[in-house]
Image (cartoon, rainbow, N blue to C red):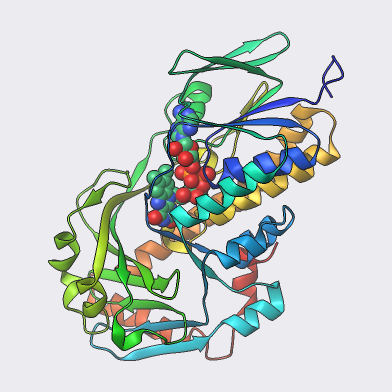
Length: 389
Ligand SMILES: Cc1cc2nc3c(=O)[nH]c(=O)nc-3n(C[C@H](O)[C@H](O)[C@H](O)COP(=O)(O)OP(=O)(O)OC[C@H]3O[C@@H](n4cnc5c(N)ncnc54)[C@H](O)[C@@H]3O)c2cc1C
């Protein structure tokens, strides 16, 4: 409650994974969240996301795990191959990880994921969702914080959560530029109809490890899959813009035997440069806190962007429950979340380096590592670091 005995109003900026989920958690705690999203329609943008056991468990505390699983395709196997079709490893991952963590991995189209999260927001009594509100400025006042939007409207709240993603305006307004470092890698992301020859196969997270490029793919429903191919390349824009499908069809990996039919079936292709950012010394200032990609954007090689956004939302719920003093809650949130997310950002960068190799010897070592990945079953010590919460 604020000094007038009303539920504390929280301005949540960004209607992506972090912003929607945190709004639902805030409502559970008795806050009065208003969720602002700059897009006036969410539209069909981006590719897909791989929800992991840790993200699904975090989502379960807001009763979102069921709807998220239903929105996608549960992954049965992890398979690693070479471009000539040699199978390095094919491991049925679903049962062991379900037994240990309660969930397997789930491929979800990003558009569908946001549909589910926005529906959950709309069905949570009392959360106001405002589309077409692009944050421009933040003003601290003696009694709270005011968000000013590009359309000229202003809203006053007790707190503001900046969940506005990779190019966060909130982060910029709080701390200035957090310069992005190019990782040396780009990714071509595509959506394709599942080719007839593999339709009906177990849902597989397939890695194809070549020289100069590393390809992954997984289905997100019965008929479609998403793929991503990482290569060393000149810096490219860090945006989710579509390019012509020929971009994938004319690429080196389009000729690889296990994936050529997938590339041929592409319906949408995106090219994005992969960057990461140095860890921030703080994620909050006065009554404003950053969460999700706005606080700790990562390169995608561990598939943890959305999963860490879900973990953030759950952890913010926990610290706000424990502390009536918001500054203490924000400080504890940073103490819990910064070491974990920084470690994952660093590991993701390393995985990218190992996966995409040009040197023959390094490629052989990488492939040997893939062969041994599940020789003794799942290495829980390694898995727990990422997937156990
Ligand atoms: C268009 C798009 C496509 C993507 N496609 C993929 C993909 O295919 N695969 C993948 O792994 N990851 C993708 N991502 C990134 C992925 O969604 C995030 O890494 C992850 O979900 C973390 O979630 P987040 O909520 O922190 O950020 P995001 O999911 O990026 O959400 C941030 C939200 O804030 C909104 N926003 C930004 N600035 C403002 C502002 N000034 N005012 C109000 N709202 C604002 C954005 O429109 C967005 O909806 C995509 C992100 C975007 C924005």
